[in-house]
Length: 396
Ligand code: 5GP
Ligand code: MN
Image: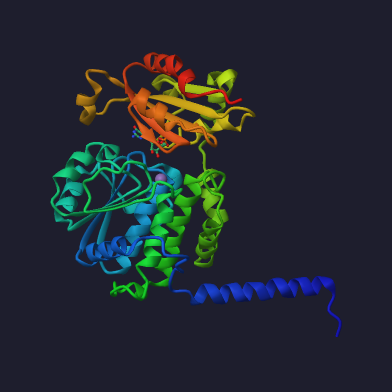
Protein backbone atom coordinates (compact mmCIF):
# COMPACT_ATOMS: atom_id res chain seq x y z
CA UNK A 1 0.00 0.00 0.00
CA UNK A 2 1.26 3.40 -0.89
CA UNK A 3 0.84 6.35 1.48
CA UNK A 4 0.67 9.75 -0.22
CA UNK A 5 2.81 12.50 1.25
CA UNK A 6 -0.34 14.31 2.32
CA UNK A 7 -1.75 11.29 4.14
CA UNK A 8 1.57 10.59 5.76
CA UNK A 9 1.65 14.12 7.13
CA UNK A 10 -1.93 13.80 8.39
CA UNK A 11 -1.15 10.51 10.12
CA UNK A 12 1.94 11.95 11.71
CA UNK A 13 0.01 14.93 13.10
CA UNK A 14 -2.69 12.57 14.40
CA UNK A 15 -0.13 10.29 16.06
CA UNK A 16 1.50 13.28 17.74
CA UNK A 17 -1.90 14.44 19.01
CA UNK A 18 -2.64 11.01 20.48
CA UNK A 19 0.70 10.93 22.28
CA UNK A 20 0.11 14.44 23.64
CA UNK A 21 -3.41 13.62 24.81
CA UNK A 22 -2.15 10.47 26.51
CA UNK A 23 0.51 12.49 28.29
CA UNK A 24 -2.00 15.17 29.28
CA UNK A 25 -4.57 12.76 30.64
CA UNK A 26 -2.08 10.75 32.66
CA UNK A 27 -0.34 13.66 34.36
CA UNK A 28 -1.21 14.26 37.99
CA UNK A 29 1.91 16.06 39.13
CA UNK A 30 4.16 18.88 38.04
CA UNK A 31 7.65 17.83 37.15
CA UNK A 32 10.58 19.23 39.10
CA UNK A 33 13.32 20.41 36.77
CA UNK A 34 16.09 20.93 39.29
CA UNK A 35 16.26 21.59 43.00
CA UNK A 36 15.51 25.27 43.08
CA UNK A 37 15.03 25.95 46.79
CA UNK A 38 17.20 25.09 49.75
CA UNK A 39 16.09 22.21 51.98
CA UNK A 40 15.58 24.67 54.83
CA UNK A 41 13.23 26.81 52.72
CA UNK A 42 11.25 23.78 51.60
CA UNK A 43 10.93 22.23 55.01
CA UNK A 44 9.85 25.52 56.61
CA UNK A 45 7.34 26.13 53.82
CA UNK A 46 5.95 22.68 54.32
CA UNK A 47 5.77 23.06 58.09
CA UNK A 48 3.92 26.37 57.79
CA UNK A 49 1.48 24.86 55.31
CA UNK A 50 0.96 21.66 57.31
CA UNK A 51 0.26 23.60 60.51
CA UNK A 52 -2.35 25.85 58.91
CA UNK A 53 -6.04 25.44 58.17
CA UNK A 54 -7.16 28.98 57.37
CA UNK A 55 -4.89 30.67 54.87
CA UNK A 56 -5.13 34.22 53.53
CA UNK A 57 -3.10 35.17 50.48
CA UNK A 58 -2.31 38.84 49.86
CA UNK A 59 -0.91 40.48 46.79
CA UNK A 60 0.05 43.99 45.74
CA UNK A 61 -1.89 47.17 44.95
CA UNK A 62 -3.13 47.47 41.36
CA UNK A 63 -2.68 43.73 40.84
CA UNK A 64 -1.03 42.71 37.58
CA UNK A 65 -0.89 39.30 35.88
CA UNK A 66 1.91 38.05 38.13
CA UNK A 67 0.18 39.22 41.31
CA UNK A 68 -3.14 37.66 40.32
CA UNK A 69 -1.53 34.54 38.89
CA UNK A 70 0.75 33.81 41.85
CA UNK A 71 -1.93 34.42 44.48
CA UNK A 72 -4.55 32.33 42.68
CA UNK A 73 -2.14 29.50 41.83
CA UNK A 74 -1.28 29.24 45.54
CA UNK A 75 -4.98 29.34 46.37
CA UNK A 76 -5.82 26.42 44.04
CA UNK A 77 -2.84 24.46 45.32
CA UNK A 78 -3.66 24.94 49.01
CA UNK A 79 -7.35 24.23 48.47
CA UNK A 80 -6.40 20.93 46.90
CA UNK A 81 -4.71 20.14 50.23
CA UNK A 82 -7.99 20.77 52.03
CA UNK A 83 -7.17 24.23 53.42
CA UNK A 84 -9.67 27.06 53.61
CA UNK A 85 -8.12 29.80 51.48
CA UNK A 86 -9.04 33.39 50.57
CA UNK A 87 -7.21 35.88 48.40
CA UNK A 88 -7.37 39.56 49.40
CA UNK A 89 -6.28 42.28 46.97
CA UNK A 90 -5.91 45.92 48.12
CA UNK A 91 -7.91 47.39 45.21
CA UNK A 92 -9.73 46.10 42.11
CA UNK A 93 -7.91 44.08 39.46
CA UNK A 94 -8.32 44.89 35.76
CA UNK A 95 -11.03 43.26 33.64
CA UNK A 96 -8.51 41.49 31.44
CA UNK A 97 -7.57 39.30 34.42
CA UNK A 98 -11.11 38.65 35.64
CA UNK A 99 -11.34 35.32 33.78
CA UNK A 100 -8.57 33.72 35.88
CA UNK A 101 -10.03 30.75 37.79
CA UNK A 102 -11.58 32.04 41.04
CA UNK A 103 -10.50 35.67 40.46
CA UNK A 104 -14.18 36.53 40.94
CA UNK A 105 -13.89 35.32 44.55
CA UNK A 106 -11.01 37.70 45.42
CA UNK A 107 -11.89 40.01 48.32
CA UNK A 108 -11.19 43.64 47.49
CA UNK A 109 -9.94 45.39 50.64
CA UNK A 110 -10.95 48.85 49.48
CA UNK A 111 -14.58 47.70 49.16
CA UNK A 112 -14.94 44.74 51.56
CA UNK A 113 -12.87 45.80 54.53
CA UNK A 114 -14.99 44.13 57.25
CA UNK A 115 -15.04 40.80 55.48
CA UNK A 116 -11.29 41.01 54.83
CA UNK A 117 -10.51 41.95 58.44
CA UNK A 118 -12.57 39.00 59.72
CA UNK A 119 -10.69 36.59 57.45
CA UNK A 120 -7.34 38.03 58.50
CA UNK A 121 -8.22 37.58 62.19
CA UNK A 122 -9.17 33.94 61.61
CA UNK A 123 -6.05 33.20 59.55
CA UNK A 124 -3.31 30.99 60.93
CA UNK A 125 -1.10 31.64 57.89
CA UNK A 126 -0.80 34.69 55.63
CA UNK A 127 1.08 34.26 52.36
CA UNK A 128 2.32 37.40 50.60
CA UNK A 129 2.91 36.92 46.90
CA UNK A 130 4.63 39.28 44.43
CA UNK A 131 5.43 42.09 46.88
CA UNK A 132 8.37 42.71 49.16
CA UNK A 133 7.11 45.32 51.60
CA UNK A 134 3.88 46.09 53.48
CA UNK A 135 3.99 49.55 51.86
CA UNK A 136 3.10 47.92 48.52
CA UNK A 137 -0.37 46.92 49.77
CA UNK A 138 -1.57 50.31 51.04
CA UNK A 139 -3.53 50.35 54.29
CA UNK A 140 -3.70 46.56 54.22
CA UNK A 141 0.03 46.71 55.09
CA UNK A 142 -0.62 48.27 58.53
CA UNK A 143 -3.18 45.55 59.20
CA UNK A 144 -0.73 42.83 58.13
CA UNK A 145 1.87 44.00 60.63
CA UNK A 146 -0.60 43.78 63.54
CA UNK A 147 -1.38 40.09 62.88
CA UNK A 148 0.24 37.52 65.15
CA UNK A 149 -0.24 34.53 62.81
CA UNK A 150 2.58 32.99 60.75
CA UNK A 151 3.58 34.77 57.55
CA UNK A 152 5.31 33.60 54.40
CA UNK A 153 6.56 35.74 51.49
CA UNK A 154 7.07 34.45 47.95
CA UNK A 155 8.46 37.25 45.82
CA UNK A 156 10.99 38.43 43.26
CA UNK A 157 11.54 42.10 44.19
CA UNK A 158 14.82 43.36 45.63
CA UNK A 159 15.20 44.12 49.34
CA UNK A 160 12.43 42.12 51.03
CA UNK A 161 11.17 43.53 54.34
CA UNK A 162 11.88 41.35 57.36
CA UNK A 163 8.37 40.75 58.78
CA UNK A 164 7.66 37.18 57.51
CA UNK A 165 8.53 33.93 59.30
CA UNK A 166 9.66 32.57 55.94
CA UNK A 167 10.94 34.73 53.10
CA UNK A 168 11.28 33.07 49.72
CA UNK A 169 12.85 35.90 47.75
CA UNK A 170 14.56 35.42 44.38
CA UNK A 171 15.02 38.82 42.71
CA UNK A 172 16.66 37.27 39.66
CA UNK A 173 13.58 35.19 38.89
CA UNK A 174 11.51 36.95 36.20
CA UNK A 175 8.16 36.34 37.87
CA UNK A 176 6.71 35.26 41.20
CA UNK A 177 4.63 32.76 39.22
CA UNK A 178 7.80 30.96 38.17
CA UNK A 179 8.78 30.71 41.86
CA UNK A 180 5.32 29.35 42.65
CA UNK A 181 5.81 26.73 39.92
CA UNK A 182 9.06 25.57 41.53
CA UNK A 183 7.54 25.64 45.00
CA UNK A 184 4.55 23.52 44.07
CA UNK A 185 6.79 21.06 42.21
CA UNK A 186 9.26 20.73 45.03
CA UNK A 187 6.63 20.36 47.73
CA UNK A 188 5.70 17.16 45.90
CA UNK A 189 9.21 15.72 46.33
CA UNK A 190 9.03 12.24 47.74
CA UNK A 191 11.82 12.76 50.26
CA UNK A 192 9.79 15.37 52.15
CA UNK A 193 7.13 14.38 54.69
CA UNK A 194 3.75 14.10 52.96
CA UNK A 195 1.55 17.13 52.40
CA UNK A 196 -1.10 15.08 50.67
CA UNK A 197 -0.09 16.83 47.45
CA UNK A 198 -0.24 13.60 45.52
CA UNK A 199 -4.04 13.98 45.56
CA UNK A 200 -3.95 16.90 43.14
CA UNK A 201 -6.79 16.52 40.64
CA UNK A 202 -6.40 17.25 36.96
CA UNK A 203 -8.68 20.25 37.11
CA UNK A 204 -6.63 21.67 40.02
CA UNK A 205 -3.47 21.20 38.00
CA UNK A 206 -4.92 22.91 34.93
CA UNK A 207 -6.10 25.84 37.06
CA UNK A 208 -2.74 26.13 38.81
CA UNK A 209 -0.90 25.89 35.49
CA UNK A 210 -3.15 28.52 33.89
CA UNK A 211 -2.53 31.00 36.73
CA UNK A 212 1.23 30.37 36.66
CA UNK A 213 1.48 30.75 32.87
CA UNK A 214 -0.39 34.06 33.00
CA UNK A 215 2.10 35.62 35.42
CA UNK A 216 5.11 34.25 33.57
CA UNK A 217 3.72 35.70 30.35
CA UNK A 218 2.82 39.15 31.68
CA UNK A 219 6.00 39.75 33.73
CA UNK A 220 8.17 38.96 30.69
CA UNK A 221 6.11 40.96 28.16
CA UNK A 222 4.97 37.74 26.50
CA UNK A 223 8.48 36.27 26.78
CA UNK A 224 10.22 39.28 25.23
CA UNK A 225 12.44 40.30 28.19
CA UNK A 226 14.09 38.45 31.11
CA UNK A 227 13.20 35.35 29.19
CA UNK A 228 16.34 34.03 27.58
CA UNK A 229 17.08 30.74 29.29
CA UNK A 230 15.99 27.25 28.31
CA UNK A 231 14.45 26.19 31.66
CA UNK A 232 11.73 28.79 31.23
CA UNK A 233 10.53 26.99 28.09
CA UNK A 234 10.73 23.62 29.81
CA UNK A 235 8.31 25.05 32.37
CA UNK A 236 6.09 26.43 29.59
CA UNK A 237 6.14 23.01 27.93
CA UNK A 238 5.11 21.40 31.20
CA UNK A 239 2.31 23.92 31.71
CA UNK A 240 0.97 23.36 28.19
CA UNK A 241 1.07 19.62 28.83
CA UNK A 242 -1.03 20.24 31.94
CA UNK A 243 -3.74 21.83 29.81
CA UNK A 244 -2.78 25.50 29.52
CA UNK A 245 -4.10 27.10 26.35
CA UNK A 246 -1.40 29.69 25.86
CA UNK A 247 -2.90 31.24 22.73
CA UNK A 248 -6.24 31.76 24.49
CA UNK A 249 -4.48 33.34 27.50
CA UNK A 250 -2.58 35.72 25.20
CA UNK A 251 -5.86 36.78 23.58
CA UNK A 252 -7.64 37.25 26.88
CA UNK A 253 -4.86 39.39 28.32
CA UNK A 254 -3.41 41.31 25.38
CA UNK A 255 -6.30 41.46 22.89
CA UNK A 256 -8.92 42.58 25.36
CA UNK A 257 -8.63 46.37 25.31
CA UNK A 258 -11.69 48.57 25.43
CA UNK A 259 -11.99 51.08 22.58
CA UNK A 260 -11.38 53.83 25.16
CA UNK A 261 -8.13 52.21 26.28
CA UNK A 262 -6.92 51.86 22.70
CA UNK A 263 -7.78 55.52 22.02
CA UNK A 264 -5.98 56.56 25.21
CA UNK A 265 -2.86 54.81 23.92
CA UNK A 266 -3.22 56.55 20.55
CA UNK A 267 -3.61 59.90 22.33
CA UNK A 268 -0.49 59.25 24.42
CA UNK A 269 1.62 58.44 21.37
CA UNK A 270 0.27 61.18 19.11
CA UNK A 271 -0.13 64.08 21.50
CA UNK A 272 1.72 63.38 24.70
CA UNK A 273 4.98 61.57 24.05
CA UNK A 274 8.10 63.66 24.49
CA UNK A 275 11.37 62.34 23.11
CA UNK A 276 14.81 63.30 24.39
CA UNK A 277 16.99 61.70 21.72
CA UNK A 278 20.36 62.52 23.27
CA UNK A 279 19.50 60.45 26.31
CA UNK A 280 17.46 57.84 24.40
CA UNK A 281 14.55 58.73 26.64
CA UNK A 282 10.78 59.13 26.27
CA UNK A 283 8.29 60.68 28.68
CA UNK A 284 4.48 60.53 28.70
CA UNK A 285 2.30 62.09 31.40
CA UNK A 286 -1.46 62.28 31.88
CA UNK A 287 -3.60 64.44 34.15
CA UNK A 288 -6.78 63.15 35.78
CA UNK A 289 -8.76 65.33 33.36
CA UNK A 290 -7.18 63.53 30.42
CA UNK A 291 -7.82 60.12 31.99
CA UNK A 292 -11.43 61.09 32.61
CA UNK A 293 -11.83 62.03 28.94
CA UNK A 294 -10.97 58.44 28.02
CA UNK A 295 -13.25 56.90 30.70
CA UNK A 296 -10.18 55.55 32.52
CA UNK A 297 -10.59 52.17 34.21
CA UNK A 298 -8.18 50.36 36.50
CA UNK A 299 -5.56 48.63 34.34
CA UNK A 300 -6.00 50.95 31.33
CA UNK A 301 -2.58 52.54 31.90
CA UNK A 302 -0.88 49.13 31.96
CA UNK A 303 1.57 48.87 29.07
CA UNK A 304 1.61 52.55 28.06
CA UNK A 305 5.10 52.93 29.55
CA UNK A 306 6.38 50.12 27.32
CA UNK A 307 5.21 51.66 24.04
CA UNK A 308 8.07 54.15 23.46
CA UNK A 309 10.62 51.34 23.83
CA UNK A 310 9.40 50.12 20.44
CA UNK A 311 11.04 53.19 18.90
CA UNK A 312 14.53 52.60 17.55
CA UNK A 313 17.17 54.00 19.91
CA UNK A 314 14.73 54.71 22.75
CA UNK A 315 16.02 52.76 25.72
CA UNK A 316 14.42 54.57 28.69
CA UNK A 317 10.74 55.29 29.13
CA UNK A 318 8.83 57.09 31.86
CA UNK A 319 5.06 57.30 32.26
CA UNK A 320 3.32 59.44 34.89
CA UNK A 321 -0.33 59.61 35.76
CA UNK A 322 -2.17 61.78 38.20
CA UNK A 323 -4.23 60.00 40.83
CA UNK A 324 -6.24 60.91 43.93
CA UNK A 325 -4.70 60.58 47.37
CA UNK A 326 -6.79 58.03 49.21
CA UNK A 327 -7.73 58.61 52.86
CA UNK A 328 -5.18 56.10 54.17
CA UNK A 329 -2.29 57.99 52.56
CA UNK A 330 -2.93 61.41 54.10
CA UNK A 331 0.14 61.25 56.34
CA UNK A 332 2.37 60.37 53.38
CA UNK A 333 0.74 63.00 51.17
CA UNK A 334 1.60 65.84 53.55
CA UNK A 335 -1.46 67.90 52.55
CA UNK A 336 -1.29 67.21 48.83
CA UNK A 337 -4.55 66.17 47.19
CA UNK A 338 -2.81 64.61 44.21
CA UNK A 339 -0.53 61.63 43.90
CA UNK A 340 1.51 61.00 40.77
CA UNK A 341 2.13 57.36 39.94
CA UNK A 342 5.41 56.97 38.10
CA UNK A 343 6.39 53.98 35.95
CA UNK A 344 9.85 53.49 34.48
CA UNK A 345 11.11 50.96 31.96
CA UNK A 346 14.44 50.41 30.22
CA UNK A 347 16.20 47.91 28.04
CA UNK A 348 19.30 45.86 28.71
CA UNK A 349 22.08 47.03 30.96
CA UNK A 350 20.45 50.38 31.83
CA UNK A 351 18.95 50.26 35.30
CA UNK A 352 16.09 52.62 36.19
CA UNK A 353 15.57 51.46 39.78
CA UNK A 354 18.24 53.79 41.20
CA UNK A 355 16.54 56.79 39.56
CA UNK A 356 13.16 55.56 40.89
CA UNK A 357 14.57 55.33 44.41
CA UNK A 358 16.63 58.55 44.47
CA UNK A 359 14.16 60.82 42.70
CA UNK A 360 10.76 59.37 43.50
CA UNK A 361 11.34 57.33 46.67
CA UNK A 362 10.35 54.15 44.86
CA UNK A 363 12.28 51.19 43.51
CA UNK A 364 11.80 47.98 41.61
CA UNK A 365 13.67 45.84 39.13
CA UNK A 366 16.57 47.10 37.01
CA UNK A 367 14.41 47.37 33.88
CA UNK A 368 10.97 47.96 35.47
CA UNK A 369 10.59 50.32 38.38
CA UNK A 370 8.20 52.83 39.79
CA UNK A 371 7.54 55.37 42.47
CA UNK A 372 5.10 57.97 43.70
CA UNK A 373 5.15 61.72 44.05
CA UNK A 374 2.72 63.55 46.31
CA UNK A 375 2.12 66.92 44.68
CA UNK A 376 0.94 68.49 41.42
CA UNK A 377 1.73 66.78 38.12
CA UNK A 378 3.82 69.68 36.70
CA UNK A 379 6.08 69.44 39.77
CA UNK A 380 6.66 65.71 39.22
CA UNK A 381 7.39 66.34 35.54
CA UNK A 382 9.87 69.08 36.45
CA UNK A 383 11.55 66.74 38.94
CA UNK A 384 11.96 64.21 36.15
CA UNK A 385 13.34 66.82 33.73
CA UNK A 386 15.80 68.15 36.33
CA UNK A 387 17.27 64.72 37.01
CA UNK A 388 16.98 62.23 34.15
CA UNK A 389 20.17 63.34 32.42
CA UNK A 390 22.22 62.37 35.45
CA UNK A 391 20.88 58.82 35.42
CA UNK A 392 19.92 57.95 31.85
CA UNK A 393 23.34 58.00 30.36
CA UNK A 394 23.95 58.19 26.63
CA UNK A 395 26.00 55.12 25.72
CA UNK A 396 28.92 55.43 23.37
P1 5GP B 1 4.58 49.45 37.49
O1 5GP B 1 5.22 50.46 36.61
O2 5GP B 1 4.12 48.26 36.73
O3 5GP B 1 3.56 50.03 38.40
O4 5GP B 1 5.72 48.92 38.46
C1 5GP B 1 6.83 48.24 37.98
C2 5GP B 1 7.66 47.75 39.14
O5 5GP B 1 8.18 48.88 39.83
C3 5GP B 1 6.88 47.00 40.19
O6 5GP B 1 6.92 45.61 39.92
C4 5GP B 1 7.61 47.32 41.46
O7 5GP B 1 8.73 46.50 41.58
C5 5GP B 1 8.15 48.71 41.23
N1 5GP B 1 7.36 49.80 41.81
C6 5GP B 1 6.30 50.43 41.26
N2 5GP B 1 5.86 51.41 42.05
C7 5GP B 1 6.64 51.40 43.16
C8 5GP B 1 6.68 52.17 44.35
O8 5GP B 1 5.89 53.10 44.58
N3 5GP B 1 7.64 51.83 45.25
C9 5GP B 1 8.53 50.83 45.03
N4 5GP B 1 9.46 50.57 45.97
N5 5GP B 1 8.53 50.09 43.92
C10 5GP B 1 7.60 50.36 42.99
MN1 MN C 1 5.91 40.19 39.58
